[in-house]
Image (cartoon, rainbow over all chains, first blue to last red):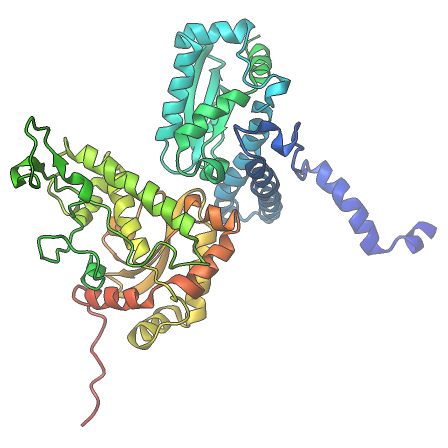
Length: 229
Length: 265
């Protein structure tokens, strides 16, 4: 009895709601921190771009993804099939944006922390086997990235099933899995204009040439080793 | 493009106002290498003229749209990006079956019903960017008058409704795209549409009236990620209702928007 007097219906509902949502498996997503300072990737990528890219663009994807998830939950619980279907593009766009950028921050590393250092070990050999040399890989990725019309990403992917490295591009914020369920992203390069325009203007090829100086091959190797085991 | 009939600076040196945007650009005059040194200007035969597409200039100075669109943005957007489309298109046309098409024709044909051919991206970007610069003017914006306002109010119920629809379409584009006010031929009314990448209402046979570039390169230098401010400034300060009026007049040659009001005697 005392419990009921102390806790009003409203506060009880508020206290239960996160628990309820967690029970239903609905988490809210948050913006991951960058593992380095905004200016740490200069001169390859300017601090201004990193700050805007992280605090504005990625944050917007996270915010809108959470919003879309809420709307999805509501539509599912109401059994509103058209609403569920209509939310798919917002989920793909914002969820993809969150996924892609979370990988992207890991793909970059300041030069003084190992950024740009080529991979040794299994990934290095795989690159030589599948592409001939690192130079060929970089050249191919750069040309695919430069040729992408509009907004999108260029990926170095591991095909888990065929056990081979591939280069793929995705449009807008489509995550790599949309190109194949067996594809694991090792490296992704954002070729949306917001990723380079303030610094490189419309010369996307220069951005692509320079970004390799801060690519975190260590992360790519770790993912490669884990997924090819 | 109808707007070219109004904008004075854009005409080709042959003295005829043509409706396609074929222009001779100054760097098409290439001097053939010659062992002779002429004391007078080179004879005509030494010039090799190519007559594909040229870069048309916006009908205002590059800094005329300040402070809503900086000179730097126009310099880079028009001088580099738009220019690149011209050069790429000319390069493709050297070996293309579409050599000789007008730009509008080429856009429609190379769209190929959604399976675009290699020429489409540059041809359509070129057309859209020409259209974009001419959709703006210094001291533009505010509210249209006369027939244009009447038509907008007829098709959107109010001018504010049109603005809201335009802004919402612009902000809801996923990725790169454009937002348009266009005239639907069959329904004979104005509508707002958003398109992806380089697509324009030309590809589905309707008549564009206003085009706003929503690719990040169009606003990022001035507004960073604040697209709302960019679109609002376009509507409030840049859009050329004069261009709109001329385009509507031209469109009326193709679409019957109704009888004019004839005053009673």
